[in-house]
Length: 241
Image (tube, rainbow, N blue to C red; front, side):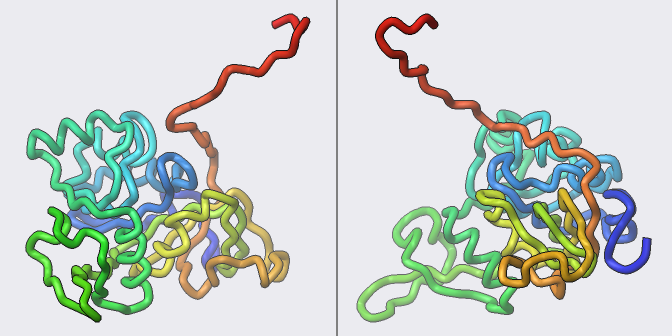
């Protein structure tokens, strides 16, 4: 393909993967994750990865398939979630884990994308989160210094994109994806739909195409639900159930 648009996930990642690299992966739980790009990374066999993501999928889906394949060396995340293998590998010392309060993780990524090397936050002061980090007083309050995060590669999921890489995210899938798109040396996007330039309402674009290097239309999106939670159906008198 020409320009930014790629034929598939394997082509989109061609020449970008190497052992020991750092990858940012968008999404929250299983919502808004770049399913096709994760599968292509699994297929590539690249290993010793440091992965920056809110969590690590589940045992057989999302980033969990990279964990199961022994490809991840370290996770920088906020939530272990429903992944039992994640817990097992961490507790056995086979997986490095850098835990972050969720808002701090989001701001570290945003700061990295904005070229801000570090910032101070009150979150985590006086806890294990602050161990080994600089703590400074501002206006009588203590703040801990956190470093901005960047990556060799950001993989992002969008709802719609155009051929120039301008992106729109849908509802709660607009979670870590926008900030990660700015913080990778290279950003590769999978979208549910790709349209021509000018087809997107300029006022609705969340990520400008300047941040996007390659884009593909995802082949399939399972969109699994991490944990289905329902409540009993309300019934009325005389209703048959």
